[in-house]
Image 1 (cartoon, rainbow, N blue to C red):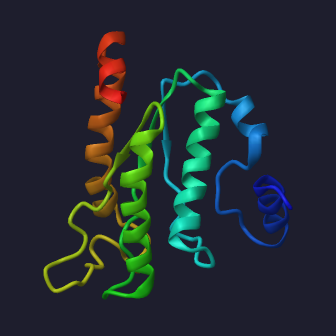
Image 2 (cartoon, rainbow, N blue to C red):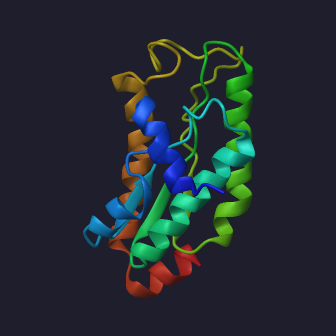
Length: 167
């Protein structure tokens, strides 16, 4: 059976990689960070929601192994497409699976990145996502504000608070 690492390496030879780092090599080279943000998964079209969530969990476990001091923030997948569609439903299912699985792992928090992108009619505005997938400046602002607040909270905690927040 081919390892996930080897599969990703083979996939990367034919196309742009879906993950910023592949395998142990990059994690081993990382500095000792206090907070690491993981935001992956929306482009895994060929994978099921369970596989995408499992891949994100595997990344978190790898970071926990290599960077045990780090607090990890996993950004939930954004809705995509101007109107409701199967990929949007899949991303929502990935987020639901992560809400159940990530609390079981050490040092990780899931941040729901859906900052009101879907309007009451089910549509996403081109003012938030110019192509209904990639964020505009305003779209990034909606995500970065709560992300910044959480990062600052994690950086400012005392060691005792860090234990109770993440535990």
